[in-house]
Amino acid sequence: MSDDADRPGDDSGPRVAVFRPDDERIDEAVDLLASLGARPVPDPMLAVEPTGAVPGDAAAFVVFTSKTGVELAAAAGWEPGDATLVAIGPSTAAAAREAGWTVDLVPEEYTSAGLVAALRGRVDGERVEVARSDHGSSVLLDGLRDAGAAVTETVLYRLTRPADAGDSADLAAAGDLDALAFTSSLTVEHFLAAADERGIRGAALAGANDAVVGAIGPPTAETAADLGMDVDVVPDAADFEALAEAVVAAVEGLPAGSDAPAAAEDGGD
Image (cartoon, rainbow, N blue to C red; front, top):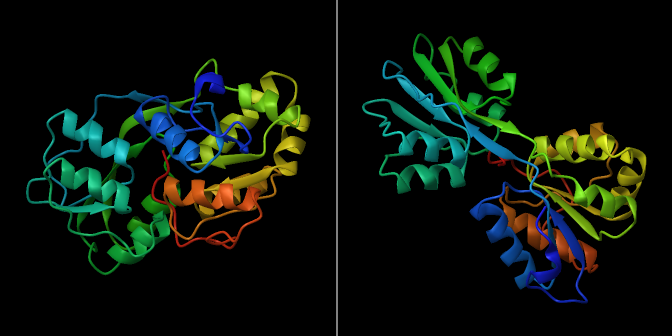
């Protein structure tokens, strides 16, 4: 984890742990939290390991479920050709457009279930390729197959936990965090796995529940709740800016965007 002592932010602001990958995403998250008056505690819980695979060229539909997947495929020189390109949400779609691709469909609900609902009735008898990480939900594959599609999954990258992750678990166990901002189910799982390795899972969980727990969307919130966390904040928009604003507002006792399930989750990190 990067030391937050030299990070920007209000020294009197709330300490907010953030778990995005250790690349431009953690830097952007830190800068955003600092601009909101928080003291960011960066603790990257995800490392991206590309597999080198790219989608095939025989599918009628190609579905991307994250910005990371789009960027890896684009960097490898892949092009959608005549395939109908589907992106799970705005961040993924924006990355695809930045790569010069035409995005044909973004579902109204940015979840696997939302993708299935958007494609049902269009994919019967068609070949659909799903390009994503090794931690993708079976909901998407099963739903598309139920809709009559011939589905192929391409694993573009693996998501692992960095060996040095977990300082935030120590801080949570000591009661030194005001909030935790989780950006995917896997960040929740890795946070608790790191606490387990340090022998402080119970204390870290108690410390998290004494703080504000924010989740970027319903799938992340459901995972956190299943693992014993009391989720306080799920923003209306499934992006990190909305999550950060809602978490800081909740710590400060201000009205947040929403504390009810959000519309969806845009693939997380």
